[in-house]
Image (tube, rainbow, N blue to C red; front, side, top):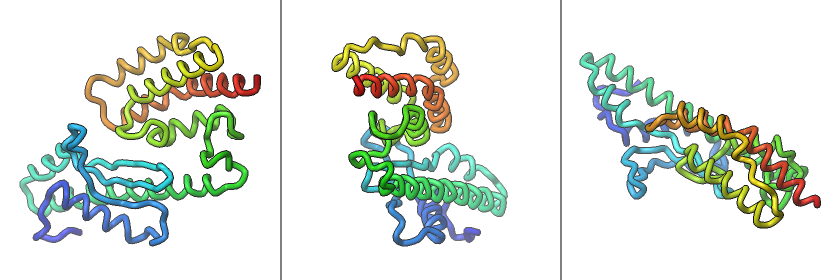
Length: 220
């Protein structure tokens, strides 16, 4: 439990969460963990960044709204308890990200998935279904940060354009216009990170189609 002298702020909560998460994480874990802000991109929130040299990227947000809500709790003991709960929650997300990074590193090192250094490279040994699952599970590897539905959709449009240019394949996204419209409507104007991920997961059947088209084009 944090002490009475702990100053509640986004950066202090982030450092405390990193410290709490790091204790059970081995020193040779492949991921680096650090506190950062994305002010350069117009985002003034504080994040815990989990990164690997092979491209894994996960940002755990220390939301200002949540910090302000904690600070508005009048009872000091209840305020510290709420802050500790938030620290523990962020630490658990950091641990989960590190475990995911370790899994990814293991996949890179797995000989039966070694296809040019990218386990889910299009046209590699992974099936289109496996490639689509990899995308929705770790979209940041494919589209970078920030992980947003519109960026994932742009990836799909770019992928289709490349297929059309290289192989003459006809676009397929229009076949899913109703699904895409529904997802956009549910997403709203200011979605949370979890809502963005949920929306991206709805793209899985479309991803299967475009990855299947890429595999078929390569075999022609």
